[in-house]
Length: 273
Image 1: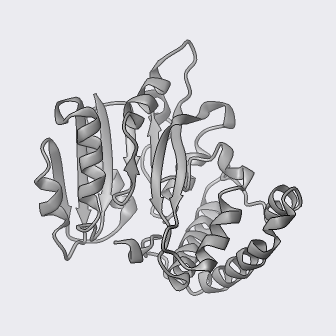
Image 2: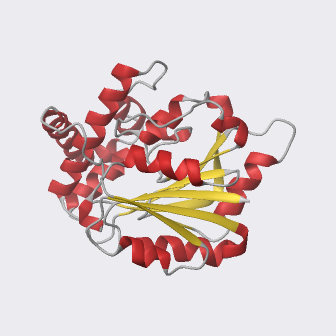
Image 3: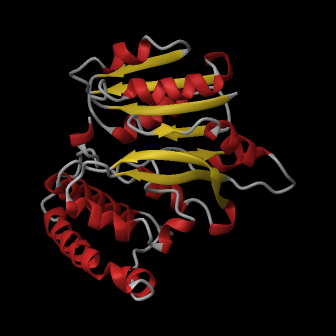
């Protein structure tokens, strides 16, 4: 049985769509879905609990890492999928990821769907940023940035708990070599881009701060490649130079903002909730 763990903090507006896509695809009898509503002041728990087969655990304090650990302990099966509450998977994606983890003589230990950034209706700066970001080669075998990660039982043996840092997806990425990960090309996750430029800056700053904290406390975490946007994206595609100007400006601004980022905040975008 596939287990899906969703850490949800004030996700009442979006979690219904996430869960409905899962249930319509697989059916509640084929899935073990655990939603950990942490520190919520909205109807996240009620909305999730109305879906058939969904188990809801409520925690008083907000914190994604703790919520993931609680959900992990409650989950019953493998493969294990960690899914963001605002992400929608395409039909068949869940089972294709699960099949990839279990088929063949030496299946991967972790898989991820292709990422589709939803940028419709966003300002030009957000479009420009993702015109570069979505072409970065680091995402070819990266577990992060997709809102959905699936691991096998053998893969789960690589770690005991999620650390308290924000970067849970980067942490999972650091547990596996490139040869042990695989993108499932016929599975897609729809990830909502921030609706405003200031929301993009806030989200990037939080993610950057979490990544820095994780790299300082754990070995083997993938390093960033600051020049990749130029070498791998813009030089082969010079028509992206205007977008690159925005990308660099946003990246630098987010780096400066990250220095003031609180250590315990969620690294997420609230504008899409």
